[in-house]
Image 1 (cartoon, rainbow, N blue to C red):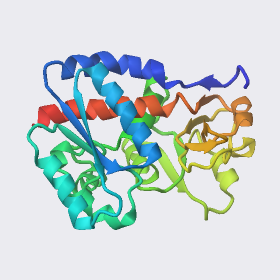
Image 2 (cartoon, rainbow, N blue to C red; image 1 turned 180 degrees about the horizontal axis):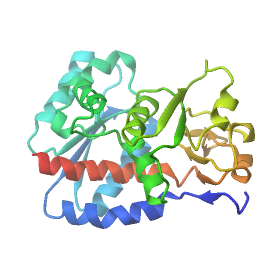
Image 3 (cartoon, helix red, strand yellow; image 1 turned 60 degrees about the horizontal axis):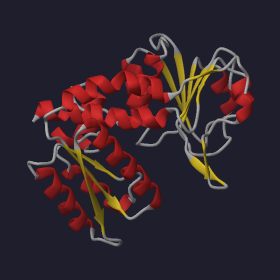
Image 4 (cartoon, rainbow, N blue to C red; image 1 turned 180 degrees about the vertical axis):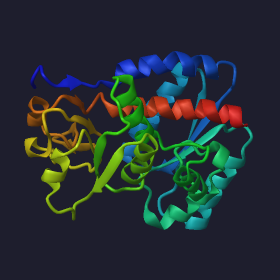
Length: 273
């Protein structure tokens, strides 16, 4: 890796957020409820949230749905935990099998920390008050922490998923960036990406972003996560670190900030309730 590429590590950003979150949650008896299935990646993620909850002085309830549960029963599971007055905030496994998608409408919008209820999504689309998804929020938080101007910049997002690509496009537009959303069917993808001041990749394809995708002044935010030979990898190839101005690494970049944003949203939920 070249010394010329500044590394946007998440840890310093999280440290700047921690005092505000910890002091805000102190004495609130906040309870985060995670709902999902017995899935390796999800279990790993919820375990990390549970450890973070301990650090912030709040609790974490991990609800595991049985494999093959009926949609109506999964919906009721979400509804029951959302209605529990002891629960401050709810997050549901993502990505979620499509058959269970309708269950997300049962999340209380005042506890919808990851902006999954269609009503929460509508509020984001309209620019109304409400929660914003954690990972896209982490992208913007990381850019701002490292002093990157967003307004007026050209941002290119590779990935059009509901978890990152689509909401991030709306959130960057709200920050006055000019946004292009690309995907696997996009023609001349490297050429479009090279035009970006801010390039965000959220595909989960190891090594997707190669030097031909970037220019020397680009800031590259790597949101992708895949596992190669047991090691976590991002979308950005090692060679890109020699070619651009700054990169967020995987691991150690967006991941820690995403977790911190969830607890920042939990703090917001305590105020709404």
